[in-house]
Length: 290
Image 1 (cartoon, rainbow, N blue to C red):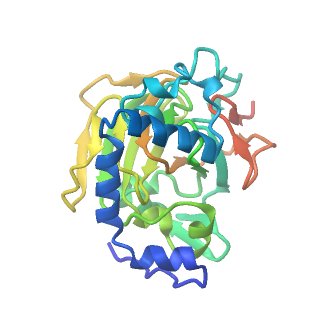
Image 2 (cartoon, one colour):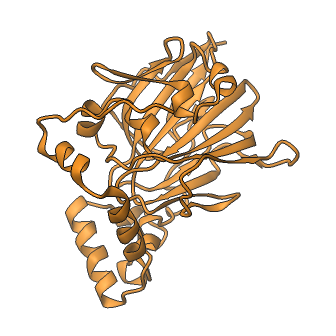
Image 3 (spheres, one colour):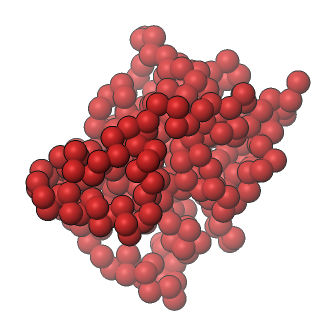
């Protein structure tokens, strides 16, 4: 799949990412985040909580010293009732911020001013899969370091396929999204394909610098390994169903989720949804007008 060269922006952080050995750095930090370091691990976790303003009152276990590894802390569960589910057809699947959302223009998804990428590139080059979302709808949701990092289902659905697409490991923060063409379709990603009552939809977990791995509830850790080629799992012969609001996966360190929906004239994103807005798991994301 051809890649568009990244813009050498005047933003020093983006230029630095172009020069850094991102894959080696990610592998090293991924191993460190999974190591049991005792008091040192607890100290790092407490520093992280202070640095990023993590609200541990929402955690099922708010005591930083109870997490044996940084990854255990980062993928911490929420306390019961912390995220009630809205009465909406489609729920927000994560805590974070809206990068962009709206209509897909043919096969073009809006990334940032001056930047688009194609649905085909996002899903790993499968033209037939991408065609199901022509002129459909998308939402790109950014998870910052302080956020809850498990991903949940926007609606009840049956799992059909999972595709691991190798790629770069740029940061996915707003500054990088504004500077690197096709960012979400060039970073490593896991494409999860579902069938719901309204039709197909795709939920894509996009990797980033220092994202040690991505995991799903039906498979476990998807990466590593990173063999450098597209890998695919088919589930059509199995009844793998997930309920509305169920956990479907998690990031071991933060990243972005991209959702694709088909062309549904009655789908309307919540009026409060706009680029840059804060979001929480379980809030109303979209409805089908009746």
